[in-house]
Amino acid sequence: MALPNIFTTEVTENIINRLNALTPETRPQWGKMSVSQMLAHCNVPYEMVFTDKHKMPNFLLQWVLRLFIKETVTGEKPYKRNLQTAPAFVIKDEKNFAAEKERLINYIRQTQQLGEGHFDGKKSHSFGTLNKTEWNNMFYKHLDHHLTQFGV
Image 1 (cartoon, rainbow, N blue to C red):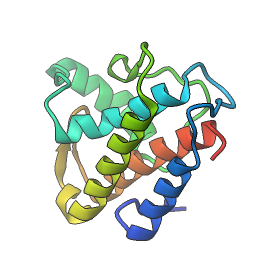
Image 2 (cartoon, helix red, strand yellow):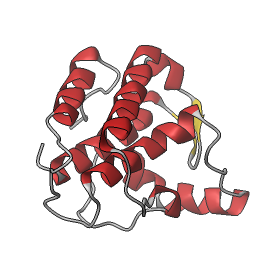
Image 3 (tube, rainbow, N blue to C red):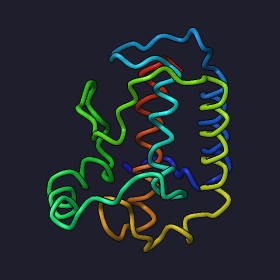
Image 4 (tube, helix red, strand yellow):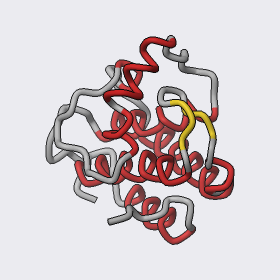
C-alpha cells in the first residue's frame, strides 16, 4: 500500500494540523524525547536537504547506509518503536517548542511547494539518488511515526 503523498496540499495540511495539535506539555507514548526535541529531530532530514548544516557521510558510510538502511528509511514499511537513530538525528539538549514547530512547518510547506518533480532524481544526503516515491516515503513516514509517538 502506498503511503500518503506528502507533496500534495491535502496531506501536507493534515500533517500540519497534527503538528498544531501538539503543545509544549505533550508527552510521548514511547521513547525518551520531549516534544520540542522531537520537533528538532524531525527538522534534521529537511536541514540535510535545504542547508549545509550536516556533514556528508564519507563514501564507505554512504555505501553501508544504502546497503543496510536505505530500504528501512525509504520503503513503505512503518518504523518500529524505539529504533536507534543516526548520530546526526540525536537531540540531547532542550529546544524551543514554538521555534522548532514553526521551522518544521516551513520546511514541510517548502517541500510541498517545490513538489515531487523537484525531488525526483535528487541526491539525498545519505542514500544517493532517490526517486519521488522514496523521498515521499522518507518524509511522510518519519513525520507520521513521531506524530503517532506523541499521540496526534
